Image 1 (cartoon, rainbow, N blue to C red):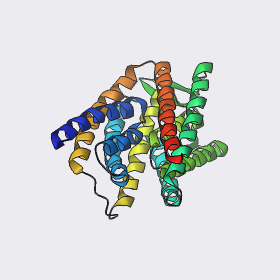
Image 2 (cartoon, rainbow, N blue to C red; image 1 turned 180 degrees about the vertical axis):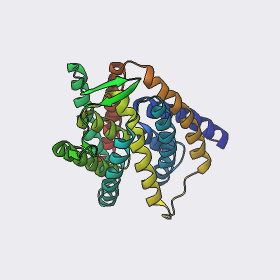
Image 3 (cartoon, one colour; image 1 turned 90 degrees about the horizontal axis):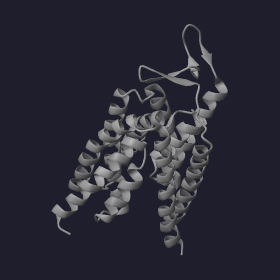
Image 4 (cartoon, rainbow, N blue to C red; image 1 turned 120 degrees about the vertical axis):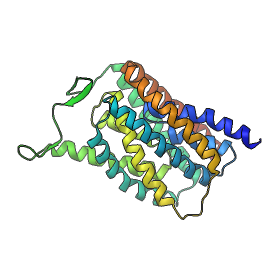
Length: 278
């Protein structure tokens, strides 16, 4: 295919990636990597290029979601910083594991996460000691407070710490899927509504993607920057639209869509893993 055709395909794919990241808080890297491979990039090039796409797109989506009141910035930054440490360790460990095994592990993880979210949605459980005020989420029981006196719900803080570390480890170990891990973690560990989990996850993804990209600097892997730029621009534009769409959609519909997307990715990844293992 000629370069103009490849760029056109990259724009279309980028639009879908942006909508997924903006509306659902996930799906960027798991979509960007196979798209770049399909456009002729090697696995290492695709992974590096996807980090650029996802970091920029997530940042744009996070800004839009924050303006709409769907981001818990402090928790997102804290979660992202903790997850970053795990991601570095996971990335180092992944180098000793065959790619087919990584794919199989990712498929199993997604099946479990998708199943848990589907069951949770079916039961109609809504978490929450939280309510909206002027369109924003108000947390009635903060995990840590410093004023007027210091107070800490340490068991809950430990739960968040462990969850963020595990998410970072799995993200670094598997290479892709940050959003698919972060959103369920925020849903299950912090009991956030889906729109806030999706918005806050964009902050986490932007941090971890930027750090992972910085860690790859100087590794000698250079993707086709024209294709990466086309993907990035298209996904950034539609991420803003996706984040605005998430603010208008019914949260139950959004939860169902996310669970379905996780299960679809799991099935796709399982097929790739079986092909590689056979």
